[in-house]
Image (cartoon, rainbow, N blue to C red; front, side, top):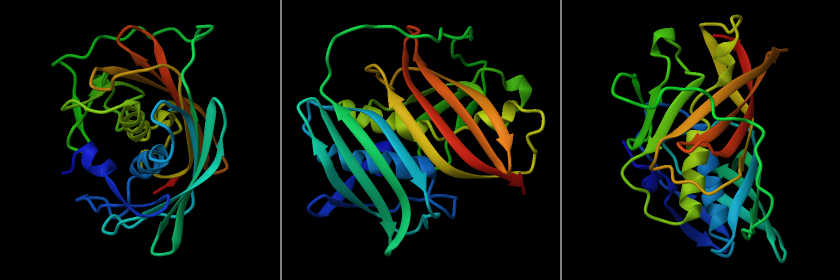
Amino acid sequence: MSTLVDILAMQSTDQDVFVTGVFDSARPHIFGGQLLAQALMAACKTVPTERVPHSLHAYFVAAGDSSKPVEIHVTRERDGRTFSARKMTVVQEGRLLMNALSSFQTPETGIEAQSETFPRTPAPGDSYELYPHPVCSDIQIVDTAPELQLAHPARSWSRVLPELKGDNFLQACAMTYVSDFYTGLVQFSEFPKDAMLTSIDHAIWFYRPFNLNNWHLMDWHGHSISSGRGHYSGNFYDDAGRMVASASQEMVVRHG
């Protein structure tokens, strides 16, 4: 299996065009979180290092072949005094896989507040079940309620080992990758056990600096399943209780 640093490595073949590698995977299709993280990393390579990503919004158009590389074309939409905007188009052999937009900001000081409080959750420990990631070898996921025997825990701790040596770009891309690993829709009693799930879109917002080498709590909430689509969102907290990021996704939900 590959490391997260391996997955996020890419070559520049032209101005603002980047090509990824190919990684061993049991999946026939490229993991959506991988495309999201790679697209964000490509955008990061086109902005000043003092600016940090604060949001990414993406639509999945087609599934990618995990045995082939992808190309990421970055368009520099705007570079202002404080914010930079980038558009990322992900293609594979001329076929569109994903469209995405990301925004970057030069950090500043100001008002600090958060509405959500840190959920009452046991700290990660050896007594909880560890979920291996099917693609990336250095992501650890610990279920906070293994007795529920959910295929996708609604609340879990995650971290990346070994240490991510790099800047805020690498941390944000790692969080983006992890944010697509689970779904909050399993909280619904109507959620089919044989569910066929396909991501439609994904968004993530980064609120505060974080270090994903430390444990972070992922807390997911399902909002709706209707017309063959489900929507959920979740928050990410560091071990000090700060909400450092939020994510939201809509996906196709059908019986398999």
